[in-house]
Amino acid sequence: MQQLPTEAGRAPRFLHLLIQEDLLDGWNLIKESGQQGASGRLTRTHFDDMASATEALLVERDKQLKRGYRVVFVEGQGNAS
Image (cartoon, rainbow, N blue to C red):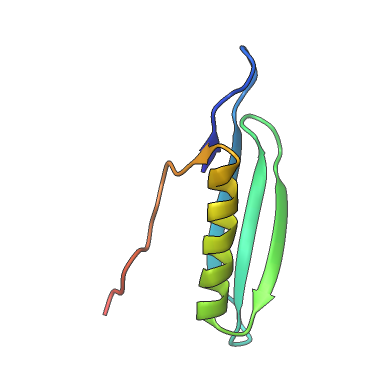
């Protein structure tokens, strides 16, 4: 997700949301945020199942959309089976 710049010459902010399986049968929601061209902040939240992690991702996405961010890249939608 990316937010458009609010001031001329200021780099846009970004938010990267990722769900990743861990080695102990759990799932992590990884959030990386910051300003383009600078170091970002990384946080991880652990969930016992993928459904809970997915729900948390969607809640975070919707919250950021309301703040003016826009989705610029989506990967992994749907089932591969």
